[in-house]
Amino acid sequence: MRWEKLGIIFKPSDHNLPYGCTEFAQSPQALVLRDRVRVYFSTRSRDEHGKFLSHIAFVDFEPDLSRIIDVSREPVIDLGELGCFDEHGIFPMNVVRYGDHVYGFTCGWSRRVSVSVETSIGLAVSSDDGVTFQKIGNGPILSSSVEEPFLVGDPFVRIYGSEWHMWYIHGTKWLANDDGSPAERVYKIAHATSTDGRRWKRSGRRLISDSLNADECQALPTVVEFRGRFHMYFCYREAIDFRANRSRGYRLGYAYSDDLVNWTRDDANAGISRIDEGWDSEMMCYPHLVGLDDDLYLLYNGNQFGRLGFGAARLVS
Image 1: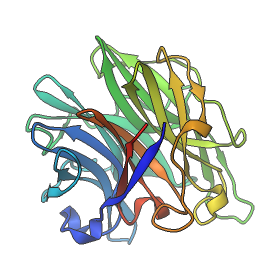
Image 2: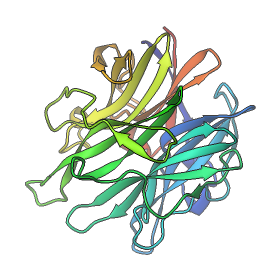
Image 3: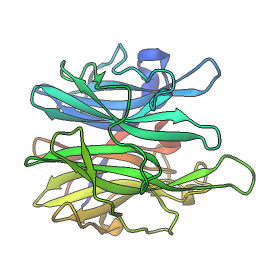
Image 4: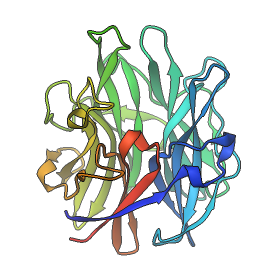
């Protein structure tokens, strides 16, 4: 795999987004429409206490991503009600067309006391080509369990044949910092299947081997079938001291599979990496693969977890 970087293609500060958001366009996720490509992303506002709330917005591109056509003016999906799993944010939302509807699989966030956050996976459905989404209920469709005790999130869903496949993450532990700062989480990539997109059966096994160490954090898997093989990109980092330390921050990982069950990690052949200077020099994270005509594109975020926007790369070989 070898990618040609196209640079930043969307900057939130250049547009009037819902809720007055001007920073962050995290986790770009594409829906291919007849005359455009709609890319959903998570942006941020602040509540009355100055804390972030994550909202979903979208930007419409020309079919080759060369030009922005429009951005969402109204909220795409409401945050959860008081006490719900998505009360304080949705990040990310992955979309899948199913018949006349678009299914949106959300990662809902809610604040905790002893640790910073808990997450679960929800489902919302759109009947207007993804302009707005309505939740199927106030609760999640996939959440913590005995084997996956916390931080279930980052869903990526695709349908192959009659079977739905979801790649997602779940937490394995919280790590206390020696300096007394908030605990940091460790999470790994997992897999589940479904016959209807609503009730899911977890595989109960780890998919991707560690590269850094046992506490490596793996996030936001994205999968595509291309040239007779399944390819997965994801981002990974150290568990501690990753926010401002380039050597410990997010970079992109790669794995391949021939059966959607067994995956071989092969980061050396990812074909894309951080540069020495620029918007993705310190960090590359939250990848998303999308096929447009005969081309394969990779959308992703750069420095500061996507604060400046998101960019794209095109597969050239």
